[in-house]
Image (cartoon, rainbow, N blue to C red; front, side, top):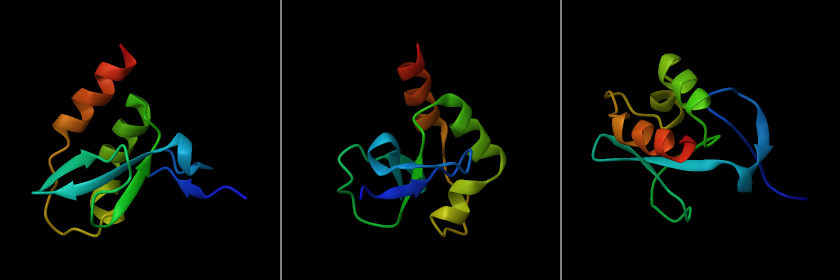
Amino acid sequence: MKPVRTCVGCRARAEKSSLLRVVAQNLEIVADEAAVLPGRGAYLHPSVECFQKAVKRRAFGRALRTETPLETAALGARLTGLAS
């Protein structure tokens, strides 16, 4: 049985391999392609729609258990570049 995770944007469950792991580093959300960065991770479909839903719901802070606001611009730009 393959591992299943929940997308923080759309809240849909999907196989871990189809989701992008993100972690908080230096108050910024960073994509963890290889899933090897230290710290608590959250999973997200690699789409702009799920990213925007997660930002709107403030889901990254809750999922990563941080009290301080996290910078999401770099991850948003990366996902927009993937979609183009």
